[in-house]
Image (tube, rainbow, N blue to C red; front, side, top):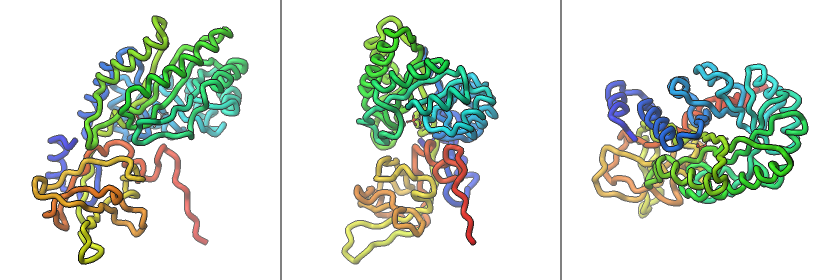
Length: 377
Ligand SMILES: *Cc1c(COP(=O)(O)O)cnc(C)c1O
């Protein structure tokens, strides 16, 4: 949402070129809403959604913990003031030397999803807590995380048993129901899987303690989404359904839900054209596109809310595209975006809900991984 502070900033500072402006007050409110909605869960903010030092510092000061995916993200969380006990190395795909480095930095909580990863952690972070990620179908999510992470629940049992046998603390189960998840029952299915893993291992004397319920909490783009309170109630109900009175420790890892609505992209109309005299759609080219931070428009998955200075005028369908010379740099074409006919070259428009997964995709260090270097010889 474009808050007054964001509008004032843009109006007085007149930043040249596309930019994302993020209001920390909104992040603060989001953090409090999560705390209130799920008071018994620890919050591990997913750093990759927006690793701006100011965001990490605010959240660290408010008591948040952090879900990180690389040594660089661990260092950012430490720099923001989080102690190692408040940091989880939540990527299931880690180099063993990065695990060793994290261990050196004091990190003792690691995600795994197969036996080979357990062995790396056992060697390079002995005695640490590990949780095993189970696959979810991602059904109902606008940005599903697919099959890349996690294993089926029956395999998670073996992975955690292996961790236990290697002297690790087989600590729990994690899942991610898919990002921008608006179907609350996704948590029901995933908690059912977690329950199965807990019970099977308990019968063998391995007592798991924690369920990491991941991220997926949606932010508002064009459609209304359930609010934190509704999530909290539903998830608490599912926890009771599957774990009865002996609720495990729980953590949540909101990324998008924490920062998405706190940011707004300011962009400018560079060109408006048609492809033929009788083209019924106008092409509107902005000074930001897929490579400038709007990568989540891939397959038109995330449909942002666009605010123009001519809202209220008659609308017509437009193809919206970025400024680069790559033909993939088209934001919305399959489903054209209705925008005012009066829109003019040079108009400044706002793209709302862009606080998450924008700066990192355009900048040089998404997830803290260095970009591929180029050598021209
Ligand atoms: C990306 C990620 C998150 C955050 O997901 P959102 O849908 O943005 O809330 C949480 N946990 C893990 C392990 C992730 O990779």
